[in-house]
Image (cartoon, rainbow, N blue to C red):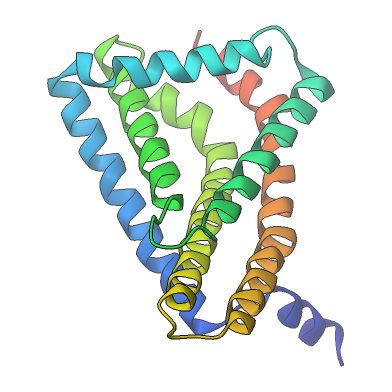
Length: 205
């Protein structure tokens, strides 16, 4: 097998899962836009979620640490969070990964509205978010899609439509998504957020 073929096989995913990724990404984008629009009109609507985010960031020390320590903190937190997103997908019927997707979309839209409302500017928000956000949010979408894919298999198993072996195969596929796709994306995004994002923000404030 050639090197190119090996790389393709390493990252290859079945069409059904790619379809789940496309649907999840589309829903995520729509929710971000809706959250931004609503948060501009009703600022108080997003405040509890923004406080939750800032409190969580303060709890893990993101405002006090920097450099390599910050990268490790961000990476470990994100690795655990997205592994959990996939794992809860194994709970049938509930589709819990959709909750994580929705909350993150609401947070992103709400923060964008906050930056604009406070006169900080969307340019500053996007400049400080997109460099690491593109890969981090891609990892989030992939994890949520994998979790929802697993939830469908688990639900069908409970309903007697598929065998347990199908759920086991689906879990193996979801773990492959996590190790082959999510982990590398999170490593890259954590490095950018720790070392590059602060430099970008320093140009605006």
